[in-house]
Length: 363
Image (cartoon, rainbow, N blue to C red; front, side, top):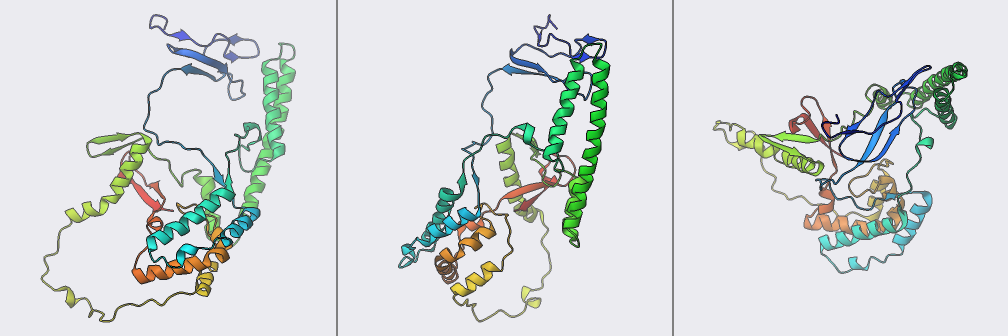
């Protein structure tokens, strides 16, 4: 290793037993070492080791990351949001008949109000010491988990005369801890199944969370193979998926065989409608009834506005919303921002670098 120009990063024992301590595991590198550490754990008598190095990394193809924030729709935020929107005069709707301009103003006003009231700055990262390892773990089990790990460290650091006592203490505490974890897990899923009683969809959701954890929404592959070209990089893979799914219809149409039947379309289609369609203008009462009839869902589209928020602020926006719906009927225009969708890809099987093995889902 030294002849190849690499140097060891660890110089203390990495395998410790009751009677021996030896340096077996190591990391050799030619890079500048920033930090090297050994993790004391009860998983194995070979301690995991890790190293941090300093090196210049070139620019990658990841998308630009902006300042992160979250949106909180609590009772106080929704009350303030409704009050602020109620103070808006919506004077632009009085004489302006440009649907696109009116919708941009309406949509932008709501988004601006949400950001000004409901925007929550990014919080400090929570310590791993208070994050449950599993959903059934309580604060008491977390304390027991830390206590168990400390007993293991005490045993590893004990002298030859006290190591047997330390090991016995650790095993007794570990057995009690594992028994409590099994009981907590059983009680957690028992309550979950009781909560979704007579709802088969929720029941299967709980079952799948156990049988296939994390498999519902698969992550994007690191690379895709499209024809003879290999696409790599997160942003390039996203664009490749978009182009592939957008071109499926044209590709199928170009390879489809046209029917040679000489029958006219009028032989299987009924007579055309001679009367044009007419949509009567909607009223504020009708809009209110339709919106209140929607399910109270916390999910949202690309605008990040859940249904429950729309219901809460509806009294403040029902007048301009009714005018927008009537203008859409009158001019036959649908707002462009509402044509967008957030797409996720579900892996179906086969090679993960083949885009044909994924199904797009609009959420």
